[in-house]
Length: 225
Image 1 (tube, rainbow, N blue to C red):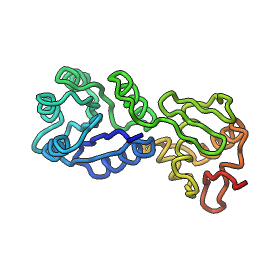
Image 2 (cartoon, one colour; image 1 turned 30 degrees about the vertical axis):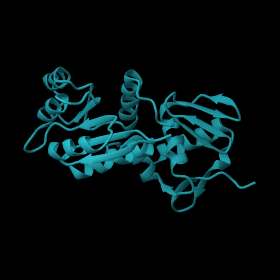
Image 3 (cartoon, rainbow, N blue to C red; image 1 turned 180 degrees about the horizontal axis):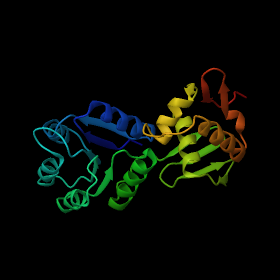
């Protein structure tokens, strides 16, 4: 099935790329704009299922952009902003925003909020299931099955497995895994990755799928028969 299109409107290029990485790793297709003007143009030319919108932008801020979008479109909008005051959140919702997330943010929280809005609005055309070897991952239900049996995973274990599956055969360093799963703002030990991988291998019962790449990190690969 076709991927859902998410439009990211943010004047900070690094932030756009970071959000794109998180969303595309979760199976979405991203389009991005550095300003409201670029965003309007993309909306006119594409079917957009959800918008991620920053507030502090030059020329037109996010509130102005949201108000203008609401004149013609009912596309769900999530504000993603460093402004954390209650008034900003209230105003964002009053003018038509569907949710508000404060930067810095957790990748898991962002994806969960997006999925919640898509379920609520009935936009669920994305193929949410990943099949690899003996594993089936249902991204929308956040459920994992191995050989037909349901496996109980924590949120981070689930996100780590999903990340591995979506980067099959690619060697990922611990730093890359921390950025992809815990978020670029995470402050903690690299050993966190090792601990989660050890537990994930044990729970899945197919530990050989997650291979150690000495001197680099880890990679996910289904052994050939």
